[in-house]
Length: 249
Image (tube, rainbow, N blue to C red):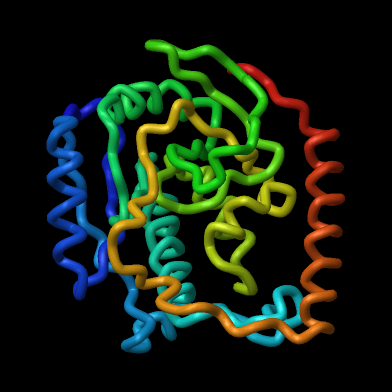
């Protein structure tokens, strides 16, 4: 891999070697070599030494507890944030259930300069239909944009040490999945910036280790609490956006 590009850390469970093989092959086609991060396996209780999960707070906000796999995913990302903050070096964090399109290496080449100004940049999105706001035109037809509503997912994102510190400051209590935590820019102050068009997408063809089955239904009172909290969060988001206008580097 080009030494001027940020390092790539792929979160991969020990029990999913086929995913590691697939993602490394896809990245190799772009001339990229990732580092494997052994994901925390909550099914084995590996998250317990890292977790700050508060089930009561989760039930109050979401109406349903977090699943073990969601806790393992949160713990894995937290450990990577800690490593980036400690190392002083920016990096790309990826998960292993991905489809990688041609041009991803070109996107990575844009990150070192952008990282001087922006602590976190999303490189994928689960919610592709949301229309972002243009911040800057970049090389080769790419654009830096800002989402008013988080794009969702943790398939791929760029994070500087400052960005890692900000995300960590907002992890005293875990009460939501890690992608919702990252999307909550009004709490940690990291705008939902992204580079489009996206060259990374979620691979729906493999087994899901996060959502192996249909979640149970929420009780009516829990559904109402969740709806109210989502409305309050949108108000907080609108206020943050109004007081933090987008800027160019």
